[in-house]
Length: 128
Image (cartoon, rainbow, N blue to C red; front, side, top):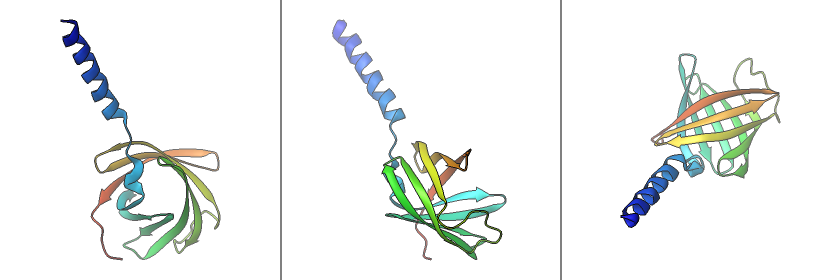
């Protein structure tokens, strides 16, 4: 009887651990999307590079990535063609991944004393 309870407790603990585990490696090389207003923004992660395509790929933001660990990184803005872009080149944004569920990555971004939550959804790679 004790073995049965021990086995039940152990399996419950393993299931709980699997739900809280983050697999942030999904960000190392992938194509994602998020909504900005009524527009979809395409985001590409490739090693230490990050590119966002806005307005049906008419404009972009290119950044370098400083990986702190698998679930935390800084984006350093290098170039932007986005009109009225409020940040200077070299600006650093801090991102922490809160959880990964299937193809969805939930994160918190911080910049200039402000923070906001967001969600990326992994999509099939498209040609750019």
